[in-house]
Image (tube, rainbow, N blue to C red; front, side, top):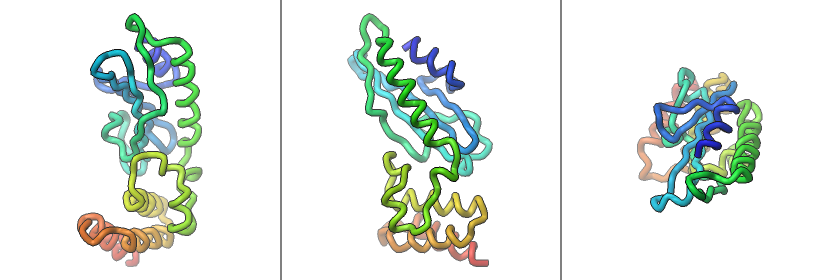
Length: 182
């Protein structure tokens, strides 16, 4: 575990409140990494969270569990004699570098033009999020960059795909749609 912590710190990650969570902010995203130990202690799993900064602009540190987009890396570490193998550390830092590269700038992620077509191919979909939840993030993003036309388009689309029983999200899309039209 010590080798992973050193690798993260060398990449600019900060430990969050003496937990197994580390985070790093770049221009537009906060990336959080959490090490979860298997109950037997022989493996570590790596959970990753992404938080667009427009959702929480003042945030400096955040735990993975608090991120709006969360996933588990397709990578786990076998622990031998309390240590993780060097090849695992290298593989981890490579995967993390790929993730960081993908989530550097909002413009490279939020590129949708047509909600139905573009949400189906969205980079964010590899994370655990519903199409309705992703649509909500798109509305918030386009509203934050003052692209009202796109925000309204996504709010209308969000209303069309939200189940009838999801009253709070329907209220979000309806009220935002109405306030943006003013």
